Image (cartoon, rainbow, N blue to C red; front, side):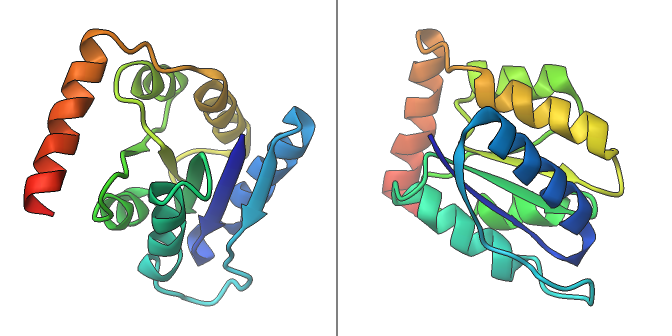
Length: 148
C-alpha cells in the first residue's frame, strides 16, 4: 500500500504522529506538506493528494487540518475520491467497510494524537466488504461519470 499524506498548518503535529505510525506499520508514504506553522490554504494540499489518489498513483490518502472539514470538502471535489472525515474508530472502520473510502480526513483541533493514531490504524487495516456496498459505490461512480 502507498499512502499520500498532507496537512495544512492546523494539522502538522498529528501528521507527524501518523507518519510515525505508517513507519511502524511498514507502509510506504509520501508527505506532501505543509512545512510551516503559518497560515496556508488547505485546498493547496488537499487537492494534489486527492488527484494522486484518484489517478491511482497512491492507494490511499490521509489529510489533516484544524477540523478536517475543509480538507474533506476540497478532496471530495475530485472525481473518484471518497474522503471521509473521522473522529472516532468506529466511523473509520465503517467508512472503509461500507463506503470504500480512499482518503481519511481528521481534525487536529478536534482529536488528540493518540486517538488520531487509533483512527488511522483502524482505517488502514480495514478492508472494503463489497457486496451490497459495491452496488452503492457504483451508483456514485455512475453519477460522477455523467455529471463531473
